[in-house]
Length: 354
Image: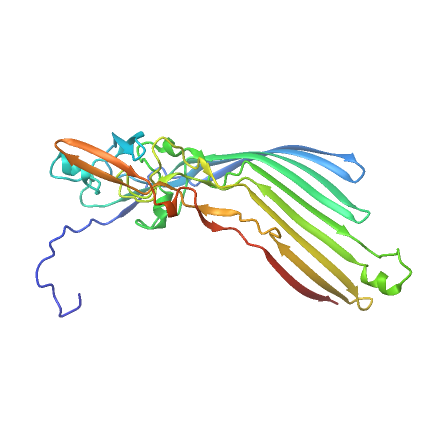
């Protein structure tokens, strides 16, 4: 609409109320409590063993929730496989009971507004980890570090960046604003098992041949690598639609499931590096480097299709309401790959130190 152009008639649709952002009066700054307890001792010549317990607690973490909703009610839903689910569903707008059941628009207590986002500081998180590390100091051309961590990260979905309603930020908001503990579960960064092994071996001067050319070709190599074995990434079994009718399409979980209770396959990553050192002068050195990342080209999944149900159908006929959950298409089945971590990469480098 630009001047002097005008509407030929008044709009017939009902305008959507604005979104509102508020801070709770008792908002406080978040902080982290942390503690470590460990010991280390030498178990073999040049080899040490350490065991460390780590605790991190996030206190008064930020979160955003929509407070412009009426309390949800229990509604029965049926999957196409015949299984029955109980869904917490917020009341909807409608002229009668049937229309209210079929409605996709939540009934708002403050009718002049759409979503009222309240920033609070009542979220918490906890990380417990036990790390075991074996370390060999450089000796006879070899050094290495091997570490294993057993951990658990739990929280009730803290977030401080959900500020764009209707976009990707919606996935950061709790599913039920009236039951914040319903989102308590594995944290987004939860990885129960992680093993890392990083050796370095220096070949040094090759003295097993009387041939000067052979000695020159086989001397001054350094081989190193990193092996990473870890649990997959946590994700939530969701529904690709606003099943609970809170005006948010991205925070609906499969009824009866916990947040982040699904996981991608384990991640295995093998990286190697070979370096050839060539001394040019007393102070100048040329280094030829070959590096390989994910050398076995393992398909390590990063994200998958997390929608267990594609959408739902709400129907009302003869005073009988029915809510049906629809399965995703075969090409977008639950758990099917979406993105992968780094594929195999090789790179060459030349460095000149002087």
